[in-house]
Image (cartoon, rainbow, N blue to C red; front, side):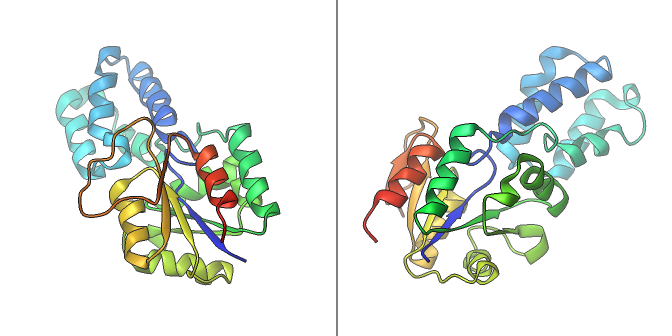
Length: 216
């Protein structure tokens, strides 16, 4: 069975929307200025902001206005309990499996957060397996994490596709293992010169459809 390697955050699920909702709730809970939401989203940088840097920035901005442990509790949860799986994405994954694809999630992040998202959305019942960077000790685009996903699902990398929203983590990762890729652009323009995706799709659903409808 051919292998389809899928990113989680901002690919299968809208991680930024979930984090925005969690951040707004955090500010409201602690009576902090609501207009700081955009500042907090910039700090988060789509999940690529460093946890320690965000914690230090929050502590520096709000100081004694926050009870002890509030910042770390917020960052530990992130938006993991607020993510949802769109019906169209669920259907597209089902179509991929029905077409004979082995589907695996390959995601950077902590095990606690990423598995909460996977299990909470029901993705654990739709894919054949997943690999989280924290558990493996390396992150995308390191080829090892993609190899680990193949091993975890009993598949091979030959003929694999990688689908994801990150030029660096997903498309560069695909390039490193010799796999084809679909960049989930979200309407962005491609800006990398050293490598390019095989295909560009605005959303994960047409990305999956492109993969399963392309001759193997």
